[in-house]
Image 1 (spheres, rainbow, N blue to C red):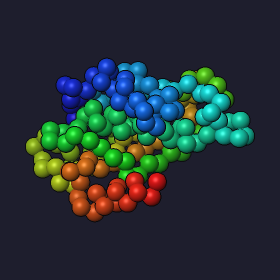
Image 2: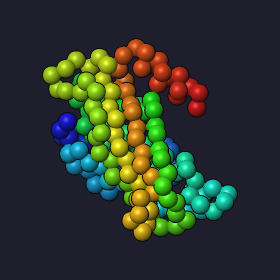
Image 3: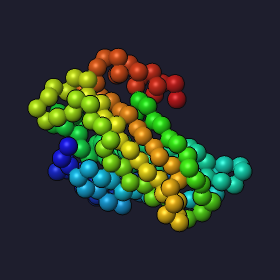
Image 4: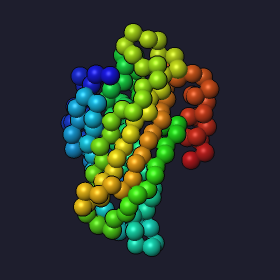
Length: 164
């Protein structure tokens, strides 16, 4: 899927202001076709009581990077993206430094410029890296494109957001 013309670094730098990405310190570093690079600084507020990075911090990094990457590549007629199934396998942790994450498309179900919006879903892979460059986790985000997904996916996404 090509990068949308309006998907610029400047646009994504402040997309999360006043929301969870801002709260955890999520920053987009680069955006290009089929790739978004992001980072966040590890700080005390993001650690679990055991002194290690809280799992939710890693998920916030990977899921936000994946969501922003999807938004940057939405097909014509679609304007947004919502996560319906995040998944993260944790491999390592960190206590300080900066975590980096690269998000790339893993699967675009029914996504194509010449296809109707009905039933479109996208899966992106986010790979958070520890400050030493070692793998921290492997994250996957399955999302629906609101207004484009089937009615059941829209209901599922709405129910998930209401449960939070």
